[in-house]
Image 1 (cartoon, helix red, strand yellow):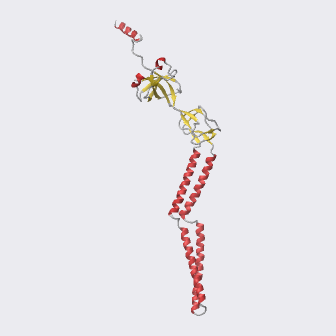
Image 2 (cartoon, rainbow, N blue to C red; image 1 turned 90 degrees about the vertical axis):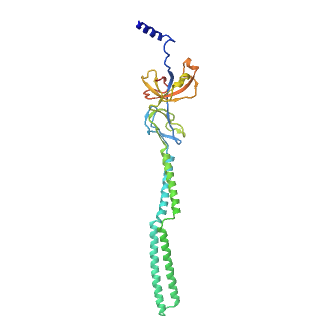
Image 3 (spheres, rainbow, N blue to C red; image 1 turned 180 degrees about the horizontal axis):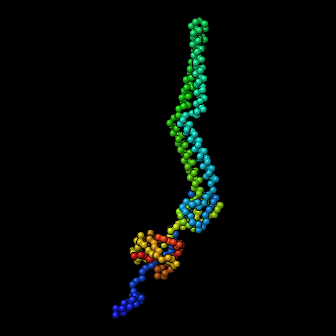
Length: 315
């Protein structure tokens, strides 16, 4: 008898309206978060070593823009660095060694002239005391001695100045000029490096928007990259089911020809409702308000963007 009742209850479960309510499922589609590679300055595409469908890794070269102007700017900046550095070093260390050697040679000659003038004055004074020469000769030699001494003093002062470094203010100004020149050179190197466009992320090149030799405007994407494992399911939750979902919930995702057991995590849940979008073809759903939701797939495998899917909330 118990078997008969079990059979009857099982039969009733298949009669519409008498069995348990069907588990809600939600229709949607897969979407990718594309990454776009764009230049930081406009230029002609001089090299384009990649093609659509190619797998790239972060840092791989995607394209190289013409570099003639940037290379010239870098050469000019480096030349200004060398000139500023030479000026700064000259102020820090004093005059050049060759200039100091010339001044020292002049001082040696001046001292020799001073010694000769001193000898002539001593001899003239001795002769004057003996009454051999007149006072005028002594005065003349005394004047020559004073002139020779003044010449020695002047050259010694020049040598002292030549051997001293520049004043602090001059050194600070020269150092500031050097730093500015180095900053210009660094900026020129960065501008040259920016002419090479590299992949920002691992992935597959989905589409190329420009060809070799074309002008690539500033900020305009050169290509789009589909990152590895960056697929999400976008689906719509009915108004009555909205409260049952929360960010971080796990969902099961299925589609025609997909492997079983696909999982996703709810990463976005709209707060404001909207009218059911045209992509939802169910006549029953079309008149209801729904909430947009997004779930990131844990292991998308070979699934493709745009593929329709069915989503079910896991308990």
